[in-house]
Length: 358
Image (tube, rainbow, N blue to C red; front, side):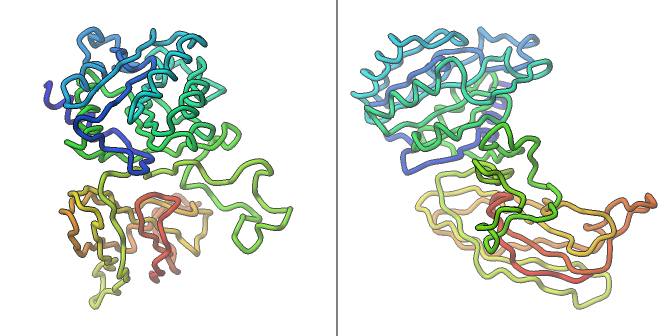
């Protein structure tokens, strides 16, 4: 069970940003700072059936690695003081890399724990801002049970990792990921908004009467916010690893036989010098329908492992039945017409590769 818990935590952690800061290097001077640094509150909303005291904290996990580690912890769930923030800046100034372990408590997640403000509370944003003034090499590890508004802190961090509530082996799992002994494989199952006013938000939203496009972005009477972008900060499906994958040579191959599936083909290449696991995602938009349909729907996805510099072809297969939906007469069927197809590594960034006709 211990090994399964550790593996689950590694595979669900999401790396959202990394400007060549991670993974950490052996012998590197690392400062681990924040209320989650030594916290064992890692089990989340269901912690009442677990044993939080038996959890492995991030500090405990990193202490087993070959780095020069300094830990500055703080009582989890309490308001940060100016004294602590000043001390954090002193410690951060002497480090090569700063790991800020921040986020929510288990009591703030799960059932009966709604919030109107989704930004980091208890002066945690102030901590990031202060530390960034003395050392910009910040990787923020966030422990949370919901999408957070990270708009204010994202520019201040060179790396952002979403640990969620990673369970009893969370500290060991995160240490493995931070050291590059394992690669982050998690992808967002929900979008992270830029502001609370964007909610509810889904990648599968319906089109509006005057949707925003590149061509009409200078016009007033279109569906947009005056003070923020329309799209999320991090969209559904987002996540990265330590490799870098590209998609080329996309094509849609019509079936040669009746009732045979369409083939959506592409070439994937790992342009990094380390093995890489990515999640290729196929989205669709039904262009002609009886009932209004989402602007983008996830149809298929596949986790693909590539060796360093490996190039490989991959295909998805779809049939008209894959585009069936419930109509106004409660029948389930697809509508004749064109289907736009998108390939990518997240909902917002998936690129249009063409259309098929059903």
